Image 1 (spheres, rainbow, N blue to C red):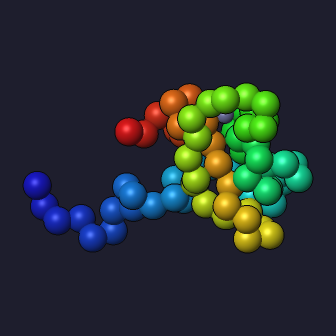
Image 2 (tube, rainbow, N blue to C red; image 1 turned 60 degrees about the horizontal axis):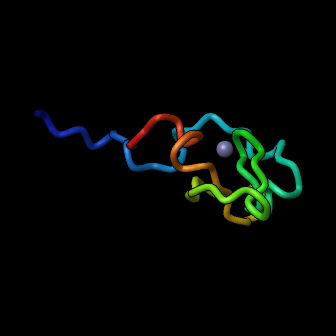
Length: 70
Ligand SMILES: [Zn+2]
């Protein structure tokens, strides 16, 4: 129950993804950065997890690729 100011539970940086090695689609937020699902063709819930090296927001499939976090 002690306060934990160092906690990063809500940070976007827990997922071990190398944002410098994304495909163009992934870097543009058009595909899952974990499994590579193309969001233009695959209808799957996804959520932003951060930004690529180009500054574009990138996404993961929220039910399957988000690292198991709630
Ligand atoms: Zn995925």
